[in-house]
Image (tube, rainbow, N blue to C red; front, side, top):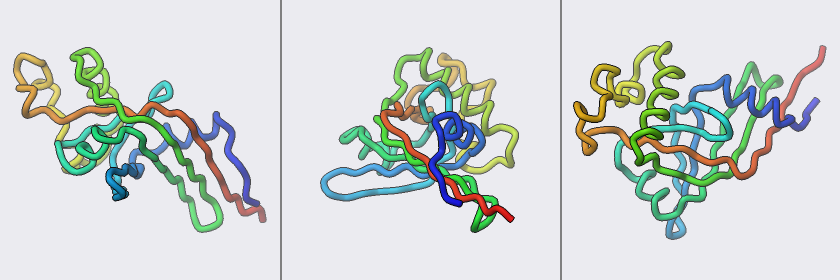
Length: 153
């Protein structure tokens, strides 16, 4: 049976996963990459060093974000979000984003994505230079949809 997820079910999928794929586009080129993320109050929070995706999202803030929760080939949930990129530049928002990401990702095996977050003892603004900090951003959800398949015995 294939069906459509409700808004509550979409939120459940978003809260339950740690990796999604963000697609951005600029000058006719589409770029899609996986990111670690946290979901909170209608926003997808992420972080990155300055690179292709950040440069593209700064130029064209409209993005698409996709997450899967797959038990097996006949039991899965998939969510697609259309939203707008917002860089968190004021200190309060930046620290809020960092805290969400640390809380969500810290329990998992460290990876280069998690290690790029500032260490807690170094996340004070006066200790960590802004130029060396990761860019923290959020995607404001404008539209969302989700599908599922559930195999019933």
